[in-house]
Image 1 (cartoon, helix red, strand yellow):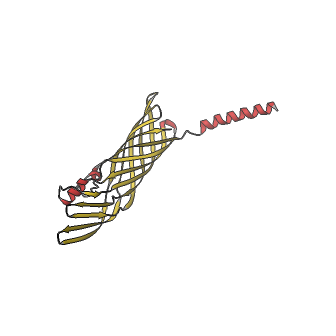
Image 2: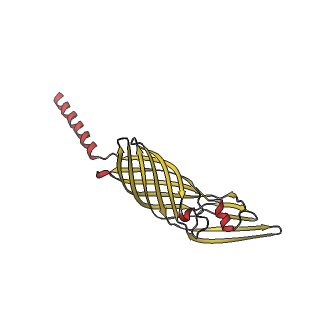
Image 3: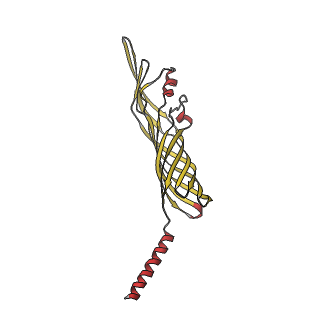
Length: 226
């Protein structure tokens, strides 16, 4: 009986050892930070201007290691960028202040790709990554006034192919600091209502529009990896 028990224990230890070598250690990370709009997304006067201000981003990622310092990477990032007051001022040609709710751009970036990791020292490493995926975006929901003008717009949603790349530094294999760039070009269909109110006069005009609004941004992120 003891011989059988010892045999089973030896087989079990051997199986666990082999399994640990065959099954790669999956890493899971969570991060948050700032989202800096670039190009048309941050512009207030270009043809495809988005008027986005600096905002916030957070998300998570899963990595499956491959040989040679490579890993398969899947991630999802959610970003919020409020609509800037200057966007309205440039559109109206007036420097008057804007009151009310300007709303925010919302973008979701589910992506997959490859990461290459290396080491500076035993306690510090780096990585480079490239990804492709999708961008799901929503336009700001606006209810704002400027002088005698009032603007309203319901939020509209769209999606597009997306891409991203980035670099990062990892400390003690846990703390992750990265700079990432993401981009996509969705087309939105939305309705804007403009109401002009003057003493003894009120006029309302509705515009149905369809525009490309490229969304590009740098994300400065800090997180932890397990």
